Amino acid sequence: MDSTVLNLVAQVISKSDRAHPADAVLRQEMRTQHGATRAQATEISRLVFSYYRWLGWLDERQELSARLLQAADLAENFAHRPQDFSDRELTQRSVPAWIGEEIEIIPEFARALQTEPRLWLRARPGEGASLAKALRHCQVLGNGILSDTLAYHGREDLFQSPQFHAGAFELQDVSSQAVGWLCSPHPGQTWWDCCAGEGGKLLHLSDLMRNQGLIWASDRAQWRLRKLKRRAARARVFNYRAELWDGGARLPTKTRFDGVLLDAPCSGTGTWQRNPHARWTLVREDIKELADLQLRLLRHAASAVKPGGQIFYSVCSLARSETIGVVEGFEKAVPGFVPIRLTNPLVPGNGETEVLFLWPQQVNGNGMFVAGWTRE
Image (cartoon, rainbow, N blue to C red):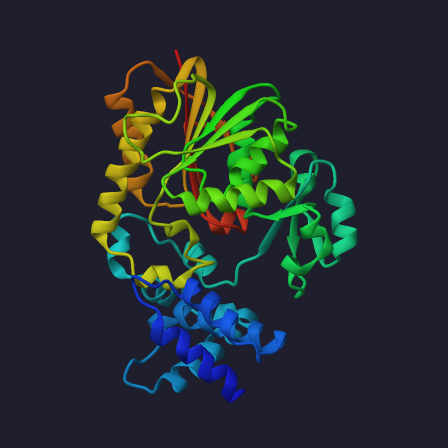
């Protein structure tokens, strides 16, 4: 293996810890490595994530270079001969043991975590087929609402493509797209994206509303809202208004909304396939603290829903405390909200349910949880 690649991977791993996530360190290191070729950059990225994906199999007594080579071999073997890995070793080694208190680690889930994730795109409305033809190496997910969702199998840097700079698509995981479909906002309505972050779900809501009506976007970090502004301009989304909100009882506006989306800060256990480093830095206390925060945010946000309006709660976590636990806490603490029956848009035929889990092994995307209520 290229010594330059190994050295750069070792730098990323040595700088990564609980306070410095590996994906962020990787981006920073690659920005400073002007001499690395595109092929080397791709190999560095895959090797960093393979190291953390297969960390449970590695012997810490070995030199880092030996562990990196072993991780690469494990990833290669699993990709071509997954049957060589038993269900028992996968469920016991792929995640820390304590997470079993929050998530049932079944073999199918463990195998999904060890599989390299797909890259999902969301085309502008009605442009899925033409985008797939222009980018190539794309597979359109389906018909109807799925016709603008594409799985990308190529190796090009899509951020450099003319289609991206023209606002023809967004990189958005398929489970994140499902949240927008479940909200199903209508043109002319007024919505609030409480924790909008950099705007991924807001842009989808706007497309579903045909850029008509109004979306309030809030976040506690001004830098995220600045990124949202740049993304919205590129996507030609203009029906939004951005304000800071610290998550407290004082809301950013006195407006009462047709719909509210709280895509809350969470542990990210649903993203462990895409972000394996996070498996080994999360601790039990994080989940409890986040669940308390999520319930507090949900209670505050619910006060902005007008009678007959709806509120949706989503997290890219599968932990019981952050999903079922928050739902039970909300329904106990806040009267006057009726659960919405949800249908999984990615797995048709499963019927309706009051809470919806999207599992990586079912949807080939991030794990996601969604619940919703209508205000009486």
